[in-house]
Length: 103
Image 1 (cartoon, rainbow, N blue to C red):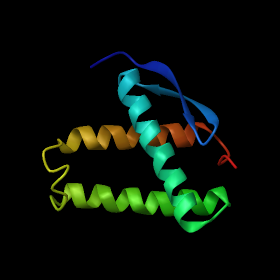
Image 2 (cartoon, helix red, strand yellow):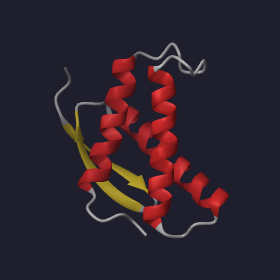
Image 3 (cartoon, rainbow, N blue to C red):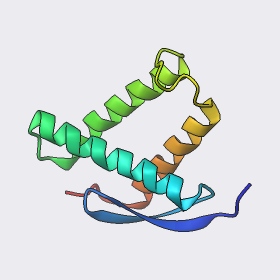
Image 4 (tube, helix red, strand yellow):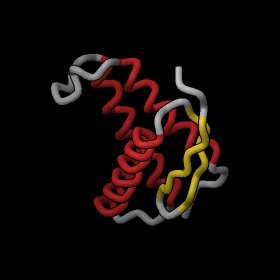
């Protein structure tokens, strides 16, 4: 297992410092995916409240995760469940360490 390191990621214009044993590039990709998904939900719905956007994004990402875990997402069917779980944990850590939801 790799030693834990602090990685700075930017989500919705706010920097979060995440302590993780994931490599920095993987964590940046996860944060980028989250940031892109948040932006997409905001654009599609027209919402401006960051909590509402975050909740809808969380729901969408949870749906994707459930599909992967149940083997119903052919695009990610080959991804090991442990890897998906680790990346999800990294995103949750980033969000938890940031305190208030960014506006």
